[in-house]
Image (cartoon, rainbow, N blue to C red; front, side, top):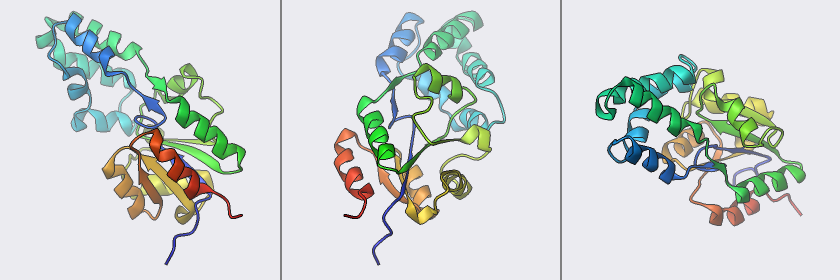
Length: 208
């Protein structure tokens, strides 16, 4: 049986709408004598990341925990804090092609939500990147208290979009998130880059 055509779009933030220049972290690591890739490696350890993306601790507390973990390799706690704070000042960049697509979809009468595992800094990031007002809803895991790929996360996102799961198309760059969305009844597409936009436009095209 063919799926119902999607009437709402849910897009991931990091890796889809926002992209990160890896040279920023690499530059900080060189400056402070840290091993290549260690900032992201430590920050993204699930035992450290899960509490901040479910609202159990603040973004500031998470940053402190990353610095604490790097103290020995950075040459002391002060240097570790300085390195992490410098890295964190960079808040990424908006992918202009994805933003244009979001605007196009919304102009066509389709609701668009941001579905992200994020910290309590998300609102400030959206403001800094001039994204306030560019989306109909923002579903932040740290505000919700549950993260992707949990079924409850996706059902809450569909409720925020006021759209049944079967009519929501979710786009994410991570396989585990795509699988979670499909388990919750959404259509889902794994993002590989702007070349996917042609497919997504077709998937969201209105009849006629």
